[in-house]
Length: 70
Image (cartoon, rainbow, N blue to C red; front, side, top):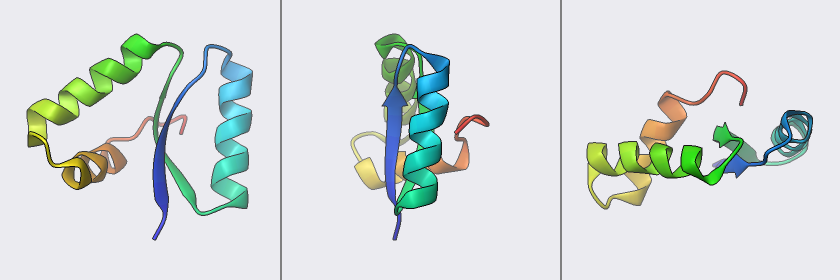
């Protein structure tokens, strides 16, 4: 089973490199990424509104609508 992560990094080239490395070399899956914490908080707020406090369901939803860059 893959582990999911959301990456917050303000440099787009670093974001792409980190995501590529983690997804190709290990058992990780990027469910989203953002250049700032606001993007992450917005992402989590949407998941919270969709599924209350259920963390597993939030990550499942995140996987289904993950960013095309990730």
